[in-house]
Image 1 (cartoon, rainbow, N blue to C red):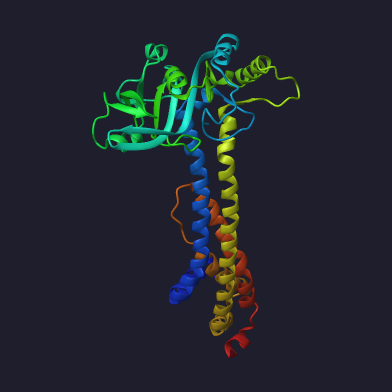
Image 2 (tube, rainbow, N blue to C red; image 1 turned 180 degrees about the vertical axis):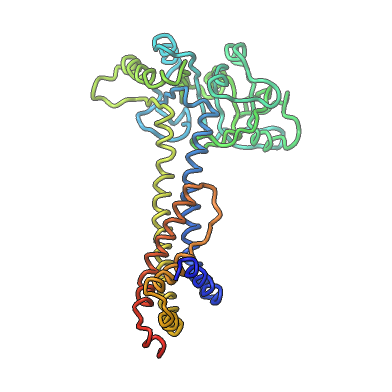
Length: 384
């Protein structure tokens, strides 16, 4: 019997028993879909993080934060070690080769913001005027504050979209006066929609003010929560990061073997931190999905064994008219392998991998029923 005829007979048998075929396909299809979606989500998360880091020019910068741990997100100035100063930033700018600029960041969580009868709680960022050139912070309306506002400690603010909506709704926030912890600030700009940061923070729910104003008029603290160091070329980032470490070791009098009171981060390290948990979860869920495929394989095998028992006369008739054992074997293997289905997903590698694995499961669990069918003697099969 030619393979085309065998395939035709196999498909005819499947369509003749639609309910059985449906249940055979269901277990495998669930496993395929789960595996494909899980792998696609894991890959998509990594791509999304990389895109956000690209948009924020993270791959061309070095981040310095207080404390020795590689924690996620931006800390609160009153909760982090007071080890980074404006003088550290000046030294980095002056002494580290290939440094183009350094921005200062002071931030504090849980700040009360009020306008009229409306109020909200958010993070306030005190940043230097050069921050938007290092970390793109586009303004939809109004303007960002400049050097004059920084030096004069002006009480001006740029609002994130979510913060503005919470305070003003659809009204225009520009030129309005808000109160941050009872201190009045004039709104001069409205930030464009930015979404989440690579670390998961909401960049639309924040207030940006001059760093000098934050230090003297709001936080009453001079230590920094972050120094953002812009490097002249990506290829220079690793070397610059090492030189920043050496310089801060000298400035902070950290001897060899002593723990650092700061952390220097580059994009590759941050990407590893941000995707590590996602990769672990993806691996775990992929194992679960693979196990569901194996369960689907057992379902296929059991139903195929029932099918062999019910079709013994058909098998005997085909053997009697000349079908070889390998033709019967091929027919039942095809019955099993036709049940892989086609899942809807995003990632082509995930689709191909899941379908190939599902096909492998179908073949493996279909072999035993197929061998049983092929080993039936024609006379005994016709009697059955």
